[in-house]
Image 1 (tube, rainbow, N blue to C red):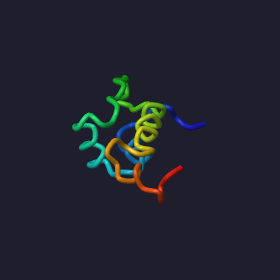
Image 2: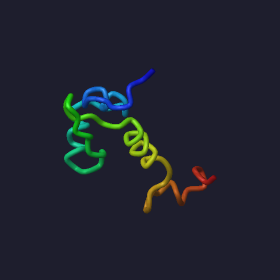
Image 3: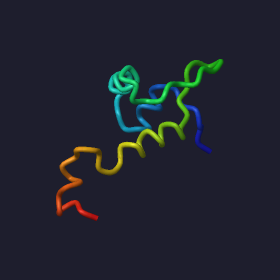
Image 4: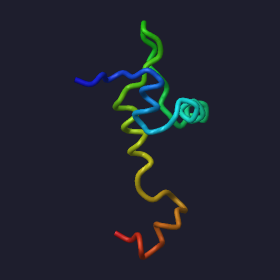
Length: 72
């Protein structure tokens, strides 16, 4: 069974970045805020999944959305 709440180092690894990059994403407001627990701040795996899912697909103004090469 996998833990649902992850400490920062595991949360960073889970989304594929280093702890310093995770800190920058957190400071920028890109990463969801942690849940305060008696064991320290923890990130919900489902919140992290939602963050990664939000990165998928063409973004507004993304040149790929106008390219025939990337057309669906």
